[in-house]
Image (cartoon, rainbow, N blue to C red; front, side, top):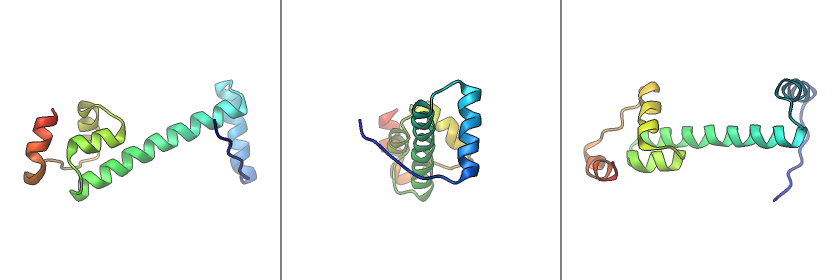
Length: 96
């Protein structure tokens, strides 16, 4: 397991302390959890952006997001992202 060390503004550290207390977590566990959740959200946003740009298929976007195609379809619907494109339709249907 790697180690990451960083300096944060006092306001962010105060928020982290409140989070630790509320969630009853130690600092290392909390930072790992928040980092994991942030990266998960980032992967989803990247997948949605690439899907909206038409640079990847729907099934590939779901894979990049780390989600099932059904869950990703719901997310795309919630974000009002059109994902059915003629050039990707065959690949998407085959993946489903």
